[in-house]
Amino acid sequence: MTRSLRFTKGHGTRNDFVLLDDRDDQLTLTATLAAALADRRGGIGGDGVIRVGRTATATDETVRAQSGEAEWFMDYRNADGSISEMCGNGVRVFAAYLRREGLIAGDSVGIATRGGVKRARFEGDAVVIDMGTWAFIDARGEADAIDALVHVPGHDPFSALRLDLGNPHTVAALPPSVDLDDLDLTRPPAVNPHPGEGTNVEFVTPLAAGHLRMRVHERGVGETQSCGTGVCAAAIATHLWAGNLDGDEPWTVDVPGGRLRVRLLPGQRVELAGPAVLVADGEVDLDALG
Image (cartoon, rainbow, N blue to C red; front, side, top):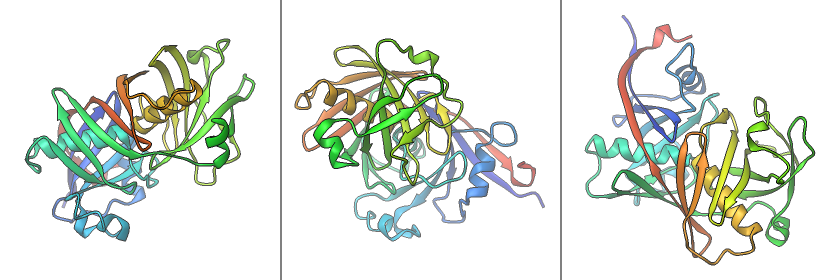
């Protein structure tokens, strides 16, 4: 008998995901299954895999503790099958799926993640996520706004800042002499000090006040068209380098997959807004996955 699995494919600024509806708690999302589904040649293809599960029945105690604020848990794995705390673009796609399936009422919802509860609301075609609080990974970063070096082949090391947005980020500032499009991101950039559990690495070029361009190499994935938490990290770092973190004017961040909006809020909170698109529903033959 053929084993099959229903799925939905979605993306946020072309950061794409395979969604698996497991509201009845029948599926165990293993690293092997996630990597096979995310494979762009032997599977469905995606930057990550998201299981839609119930928060109250999650195996992780810290996730279950969020059940009073969020009924649904975004169980997220990177394309290589590794577990990730959360994903900003993925949260928007997750929220869009819950709404389409009638699993939420109203225009806002709390979503449980391994990085804490994220609140989503719908504004026209955009999904807006309160990403919660961000933090410096190292005290040196808080003092100097620089606490790391990022190495990319063919270039001198770039000064960078490490930030925690529920997952780890290292934001590298490009000097005017370096073209963002010329960076070779086909392999992971080297980061010093070396992050033991890996890091997402963002490369930023300011375009104007409140406007920047970014490319990203995601931990466990490679270069992607967009990264929601990375976009937030890039806006925060650039704002710090500009010497002003007390305004709430939105930042516009252009990524290869489109455009996102970031607002820096009081209390070191950050908000992310952008599109979420569900493009296909289907059924995959699990026995045929490579």
